[in-house]
Amino acid sequence: MGFESYVLVHNIAKRHNVGTLARSAAAFGVSEFILVGRRDFNSFGSHGSTSHIRFRHFHSLQEAGNFLKEKDCDICGVEITDDAQPVNQHPFKKSTAFLLGNEGTGLSAKECEICDFFVYIPQYGSGTASLNVTVAASIVLHHFGGFSERSRDGNKFVVAERPAKQVRYCTETEESIMEERKARRENAGFFDGAENGNSSSNLLDTLFVDE
Image (cartoon, rainbow, N blue to C red):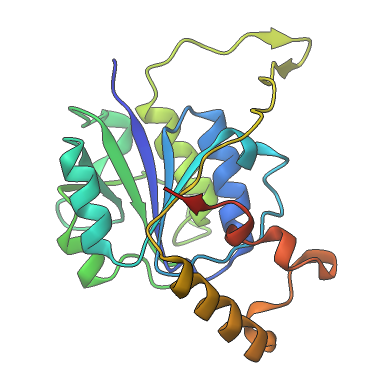
């Protein structure tokens, strides 16, 4: 198709979900992973895929929306709304950023405001009201993709060589980053708790560099 896809995440509640989302983004050829608001996350579940994904961070949804509009990119909310279209009807017309909401409450009214349209995933069983955010993202990204299938080696797909250095784009100044790290130290109970006690090495401040 020649289209690009983006994953747009705003203040995700469960930090470990970002690592799994990054793995799906890498599998389905996402151009950039955009985080809005909270910049810390646990990379558990990524299986090294964060090395193959470009990350970008914005403080506000408006900043992220402006960036995507400059790229002539639609913003698609993944949510069950009155006007949402089934994802299996492939209602995509150009490069698209998929906005994923909070795991418990879904997309907020503010998040819905920046969306150009919405898709939902049809369900056929009666045992659950919705899908996990990482599962939903994987299904939507798979439907969007128009790529040639990756080559395989046995029962696995071939993984590219890890880039020597992957640039991460950050809109923050050095001063604001220092203030955030100071706040993290002062509020260790909130920011700590990564898998296996390894917190700082799993956070986004190890992935971003100044643009």
